[in-house]
Length: 176
Image 1 (cartoon, helix red, strand yellow):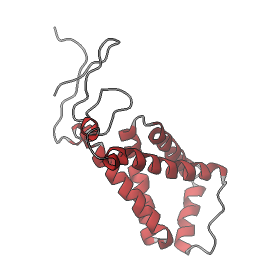
Image 2 (cartoon, helix red, strand yellow; image 1 turned 60 degrees about the horizontal axis):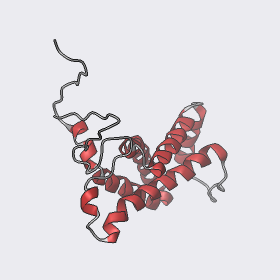
Image 3 (cartoon, one colour; image 1 turned 180 degrees about the vertical axis):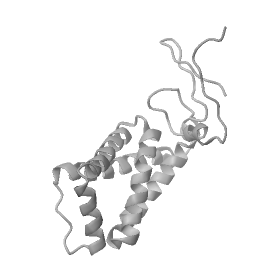
């Protein structure tokens, strides 16, 4: 496996990403997307922005409570789950902080694969919560899953090395 080294004078291309190695890689096939129809070219950006906006708004709402609370009673199990998150004293804040951080990365188009990896367990929990405890929000949960899967597919080249069955550590020193 080849490694790329960045210097001030050179920028090498990240394998499978279609763009330069750096903080904010382009989705897979970015070069090919320039020749594709308008919708295909902008779909990853729209999906990234949509997912980022949802998590930024709802993540900040966890700290600032600027959205009105949902009307109607919640199921008892859903209330118990939410209460347990709050009673820990840290878990709810950690989840909402992760949502805001990952959303900011998505909106800024930096470290997008990392942001998607951070949001994946949060989205799984959102789906499980709405599937088993409070079904009224299941539609938004399914939309979030669809956006996450689409973006993970769009950035699949970046995840390929992480999903290798066998790897070797990389050392940056010269052997004598």
